[in-house]
Image (cartoon, rainbow over all chains, first blue to last red; front, side, top):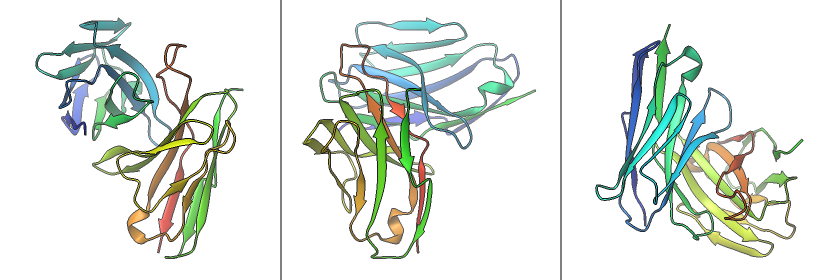
Length: 113
Length: 115
């Protein structure tokens, strides 16, 4: 099956700096890559996603890039704010595979004011 | 309000005592899943369901059962819980692919402790 690896496991940045979280996947058939944010004690929530026919997607301060050849995708957060502090999970799924998802192990982001 | 609910939110039980965690969604979603979340391991899919009476194993199905008799409900059953099933469990639902689908809506989580 698919194997998704996520790095780093923890990331500490100063408010206003950028943060980058990277994920790699093993199955070249994977073609949908969402990112979820989980605040302390809360449920995961989708923040951005990308399909394999797109190389980059942006939503305000958040962007995701995908390199299908290298089988890796990254989350970029610019101008970080304390409310960005959370655990972020990447995931991979094969289109049409009935919502079978493989998640990374998570990155705890701490934004210091 | 569109939501996914789970009950109970917290449960402490003993080894071998059968338990059920309920999950219900009011969004008429086709797909539902169960995940367990453990430190350092992320979210691991236990079972998923594509529609009523259609279920399949995820990555870590051992020790769990599910059923999907109604579209809105997807209970998780632990027939004989063991301490290694101590975890935080999330139910999730999502609409059919192609209808704004893919986004999974998670329930609030159930923290289970098996002693």
